[in-house]
Image (cartoon, rainbow, N blue to C red):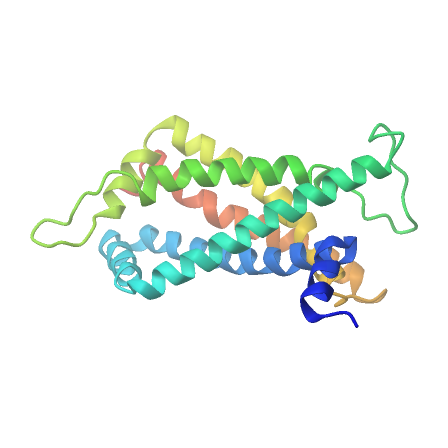
Length: 228
């Protein structure tokens, strides 16, 4: 008799299992990205409001640490499964990636689908840089309180061309990754049929562009002096 741990291991080792894990972790990360984007937009209206929001998050204490560990787990599994799927496809294609053939009409192969490993690893590298810069970076405090003045740090960084336009460039990677990743995750989870698939495929493009624009508006507004 196959035990539950063996069934879980078999699912993990199968291509279907890897796609399921990638899809679930990917959708969880999309939810986080949207929340993070909304938090960023607070700074467009009020530096005090932005600092208050950051302070409220910090005050979660142990709950925040638990959420961060869960998020780190999602990121780790997503990267691991993505790399394994990519390597599996490389082994399965004796002709490599020099030619592409559609599996049928309509074709859902795009530049974003073929560059998922590149955009994914690029985003992973950016995440390390982002955390070192903001989460673990200089800790200014609001005068007269112990509250972190994160708004000051963000504004200082995005007044620099490297940070402002580097961030915009990374958001192009994010848009490309989400463009294929959102609908592909739902497809892997069996949530799409032939009727819904093209609708979700188009909606994922709109959502990906919307999220990317939501992120780039802040650094560009700061760099061009609209937020000071």
